Image (cartoon, one colour):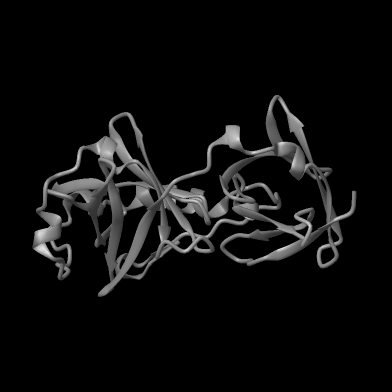
Amino acid sequence: SRFPGEKLSVAIISNSNEFNAGKLAYEISDIYLSDKINNDENTSILEIDDSIAQSKTFTKNQLLGSYQLNGDSSKPIYEVTMQNDTVQMFLSIIHVSFKIVNETGNLYRIPINPKAKIVFSGIDNGLARSVSIFENGKETKWERVEKIKLDVVDLKEFIGDFFSDELSTKYNLSIVDGKLVAKHFKLSDFFLKPFAEDVFSTEVWFMDRVEFVRDIDKNITGLKVSNARVKNLYFRKVQ
């Protein structure tokens, strides 16, 4: 993580494929910048529509959920959660979580990044419909998406061995205690959680998004893996 304005960079190196260096780098930055974050009164002012920021204020529970960049199913996802009455935002593609703090109305700030502002807006079924992130003079908009329910997914469709010719490595997918589990001889087992039709998310940074591929007969023939550094890395089904 880099904070040029504070002349701070944090680099972490590990020899473990499972280690999430990005997450720890942000946590270390949070510690080093805590005094600056808490006392910085010179946060840049961004041009945000006051009518949106000051619209009827959402409760914390109305903010919780999944938001996808531009509402595009192929784009990254933010998870808005709550821990100990504190609202957190988790960017799944790099597996980094940070807290957000309310300033006024539906306007929030990110303590670890004082120059960024977050605005929740719209309402759908009693919940915030979208979130806009303003940073460096730019706005990105994230639309609420609903995860598919586990009870409508037939996990047996997704079991088997999947091999990557590019990486010369294989993953086995099986069902353990009613959950889809990925196994690799060099890694700890991890779960795949249904997100959308034929799309799963995981808790490991290197396999953030898994999308299964079907042939014209609707049989699964492979899967594509995406994360912050890789998009649609293909694994063909071999068994």
